[in-house]
Amino acid sequence: MKYIICSLLLALGGWHEEPPKGWTSTQNGTNTDMRPKNLPAKRLFVYTLFPVQETKHRSLTEWLKIESRKDAIQYGFLTQNFTPETVDQIETLTGKVEQNGKQKILMYMAFAANNQYYLARIVTEPDQKMYSPYLSQVAAHFLRLANSEGVNVPALPQDQAKDTQELKEVLQNY
Image (cartoon, rainbow, N blue to C red; front, side):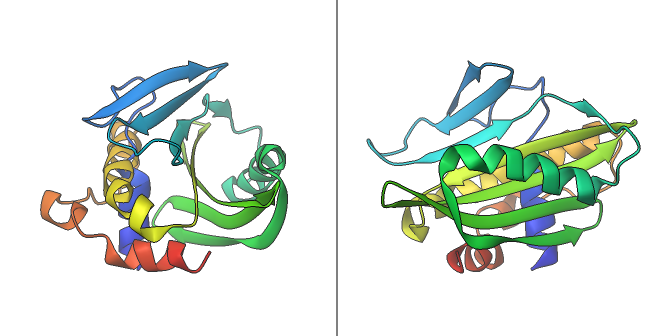
């Protein structure tokens, strides 16, 4: 399971790279939001890259907790506490929020490189059939980004990228 999550995180790609093939990219303030072009109307799956931040002598774990709490507020109140996981040099927090009767899963992914923190977020509705096809693309993109910044994490092989069953099971718990 840890390899799958790590692979997902690493697959998200670089901050200055193109979005995954078949995805659109838009600027949202200082963030870059990416969405699959084939996402059904009125469905939610957004992969966001945040601006790189200086480490300021905090641990990656502490920084990720602070940043995710600040960001998650915009999506409603927490209905399931964030669950942390560390795989290689990638840290994740995954939880569920609710706003106006609608639930969303939030997954934050981060790594440290070159005295900087890199952060990405997935926002999706809790429908595994809807979000499953997009997870491997995000993972491959984020892993490429981490590797391009000098973080030595295993890239997600193409054949494994098509079936990220363990990651699906993690998100299904939310």
